[in-house]
Each structure stands twice: as C-alpha cells, then as structure tokens.
Amino acid sequence: MSSVCTVKELQQDFALSSGLRSEIIWDILSPDQAVILKQKLIQLFPDVDNKKYDRLRETVFASVWQQRKYTNMNLFSAIIYVLVTNAVDSDALVSTKYSIHPVLRTKKCMGNDNNSRNCCMIFIDEHGRVYQNWNHYLTQNMLPSGVMVAPAKGIYSFNNNDEVILEKHYTPLSATSSKLARAADVGATLIGVAAGVPLVASAAITVAGPLLVASTAATIATAAYSSLRSLMSLRDRSYHEQSIAVTDRDARKEWLGVAVGAVGIGATCSTQVLRLASVKKNVNVAKTIVNGINMTSVVVSGTGAVCGVFDIFTKINDNEEITSLDLLNLSSSLLIFTHSVNNFKLVSKISTGTRSTIRRSITKQLRRNYQHISNGRNTRLDILRIANEIPERAILLNLHELFPNLSLRSAISTAGAMLLHRLNADAKELNLLLMAEEFGNNFVQHIHSFLSFVDILNAIGQYFCARTCQFLMNLAKTFIDELSNNIQIILNTVISTEHILYKIVIHCITNFRNISYEFLEKRTAEILNYIENYFRSYNPVHFNGARLKCKQCTGHYYITK
Image 1 (spheres, helix red, strand yellow):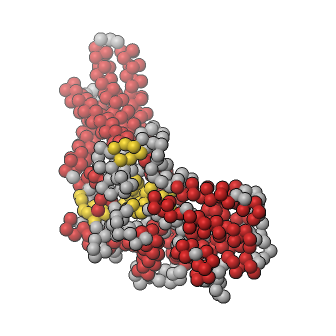
Image 2: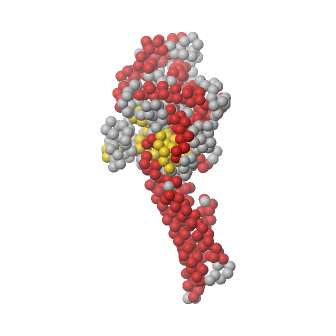
C-alpha cells in the first residue's frame, strides 16, 4: 500500500496506541471471553464476505487461543505490527510504500517476579504459524521479500525522546537460501514440463528408447523433489503448530503434493514395467497394474490443480473530514487498541476532525488509562489490562429483555436519583466531590470511564430500588477498599470501579431470581467471594501445575493441562 505516513511514523502511531514507556503490556482474556479475541481478529482481517478470511481468522484464533496453556488458561496477548518495504535498508524508515502484517504476541515464560522481560514469548503471524520466540519469528517468518521494520524484540517501547524503538531485518524470503529454493522450485517445474512432453507424446507415437529413459529419470527426480518439498512444508507447519490434518485446506495441498510426487514416481516407473512386461509377454497383467497406477496419478494431479486494518491511521487524509460512518467503523476497530468492547463513547466525542485529531484522541485516552495502571511506578513491570466488557448503554437499559427477573420501574425515585447518579443539573457530568464524600476517594479515583460508569448507574437505577442501589454501590466500595489492592499488586493491574460494579450487578441478576435488598443483603459474603475469585483467576501462575525451567531463557513457565 502507499500512504502519506512513512514506516517510522506509522510505527510511532501504533506504539503510542499500544505501549507505555518500557513496560510490557498484556491484554488479558478469561476462558469465557473468546468472543473478544474473535472480534479483534475481525478488525485485523475485516473482509467478512470472503470465506478465505473466515478460514484465516479461524486458523489464527485456534493458534492464539491454545497458548493459554502457559498462563493458567487465561490469554495474555498483545498485537504488534510488522511493516515490509521494498526500499533499501537505509531508506526503509522513510518509505511510504509498504505492506502491514499483524503479529500476536502471547506470554509464556516469566522471571521470579512474574516479569516477562528477557523471557521467551510466543508469536503468531497472520497465517496462524506459531513461533516459540522472537528470533524464531525473525528467521522463519513468511513475510514477502524486502526489509521488515518491527518493534524491537517484538515489544513496543520508547527511548528517552519518546520515539518508538524499532529494528530492521531483511525478511527470510530475501535471503540467498530462500531465493535458491525458489529457483529450485522453478527449475523443477521446468524440468517436469520438459520431461512431460515426450511422455505425453508416447501416448500417440513410439519414442526412441534413450529419450524415454532420460525423460523418465527427469520425471522421477522432479517427483521426488516435489514430495520432499511438500514433506518439508508439512514438517514446518507442524513445528509452527499449524494443522497438518487432511481436513485443513492448506495442509491438504501439501499432502496432495506428497501423493502426487509418490504416485508420479510410480506412474513413471510403470511405463518401464509395461515395456519390460511386453518383452516378456506378460502384457495383460502388467497393463492392469499400470492402468491402476496411472489412473490414480491423473485423479490426484487433477485434484491438486483444483486446490492449486489499518485504515485507522492511513486511509484518511489529514485534510479530509471524518464522517459519522467513519466514526462508527472506527469505534469497532478500536477494540484492537483499547481492549474495550465499547468504544463508541471515545469516538463520539469527535464529531468532526481529521486523522491527526483521531490519533490524539486515541492516544490521550489510552495514555490516561495506562497511567491508572502504572500508578506512578518507575520499575519495569508487566502491566495487565483486563478487558472492559461493559456493553453499550442501549444494551444495559434493555437487560430486562434478557433476564426475566428484571422489570422496569415506572420511575426512578428522587432518593435513588440523588443517591446513584450524583449528576449535575445537565445530567452529563458526575458530581465527583459528592460521590467521594459518599463512597470515598478510592472509589472515585478508580473510575476509568465516567461515561460507562454513568451508563451502569442508569441501568441499576432503572431496575433496583434506592435501597438496593445503595447496597450494590456499597458492595463495590467494600471490594475496592478491602480486597482489590492485594489483587492489583499480584496482577500489576488496576481494576476499575465500573468493572467491579458491573460484575456485581451481572452476577446478581444472572444467579439470583430474587433480587430484592433483603435477599441480596444476606448473600453479601457470597457475592464478594465470587468477585474476588473472578479477578484472582486472572493470575497467570498455575499453582497446581509443574514449574518448568525454560531452556532458551532465564525464566520459567507453567503448563495447564
């Protein structure tokens, strides 16, 4: 693609939207949040009308999701972007012609403090190929020929001038060995074509013996090479945790290559068998065998012949006005960067603007969230982002259509409105001072998205009486004050107030038919225990699993079976 952005500028944008100083950022998904990863993959590979992309997303999803075995069945992942340009190495960073290739990074090894720095990480490319560490990716990827520009060590980080740290390499396809292999493929094809001419001709006329022998030798060599290359490809797929089952379309082509080569050798040799058999007068038996082999070869070869996102920063010119449709599409795409299901609130604040204003808005929002997570700590940490699964306002206000135990209240009481919303007269902004007096500074400081928080307050005010609303808010306050700090220290994360309140509400309406204050109040300990266990379950350490020393780095890892 050609863009007004240079390679370095685009990587800088990606880094600002994905990284924080030198910390390693991980987006966490629990076992029941697979749909969020699938939504991200739709944004990475958005051609939903093409079955090829459907298969691609399924393949990448399977490869990424199975890496949870190293992190207590939770997925710890991040998305980086590798750009490939045909420019010479010295001009690669300023090139405006490049292809963009997403790579998903997942957590494997960790040090004694559960830090991933200098430890092995898994990398999964856009083909679903799995690489056991960054060096494996650099040397074994399937990127097109050219210079690849990637975040250093596969992690977005910045130097002292807040510039993204990048590394450049020639892709493996640019290497001499790869070019020789491709030349050998072409050579084998030409040999196969040339050798096929006399064999085809032999079906119609008598061919001189020496010519047929030479043709046979060339064909056998070509078929053997074809089988070898297909077997090597299958071995490579297996090594990179790609499917080698015959039900997989790409693997099936390689198996067909093995079969074509093997059967082709048999078919070629069968010609010699027939010639010898004719000399010895065993023509009928020989013809039956040879015809069977040749028919198989024709069928397999015929089958083999048959089988034979990034607009956010790049497509919009700086002087082009952003339309409402652009904003809607952008809202969906931001899941990749924000790890939040609901992003329309972010882009809705940009009624009109340009690409640069969108970049600034995204960066400002994300950096603010990262500051919540880092909490002013200067040490290098693995920082975890728990998925914000709070849905859109319209869904929250229609929960009664999903849960029969909910019913709309005719009106929110004055007491409930004052207690819950804490809104100013224009009903758009929270009165933070009043809320801090009621529920404490911790409660207010841990609100990451005030708009999402207001949406939840409106929902519970719609379904619960003022007394129950007060109870739910106090449950969230108790969890923040008494339980969340220890969890946050273990996970290196900050759990937002709105997320805690949302999980409490959803747990109650999902598990209890009776949602009256009297009923819920008796289950205070049960509810808090569930919420605590839910957030503790994000710990990547599997305490009942064997701790294994990594042979490639200084860290260790666990495997959950």
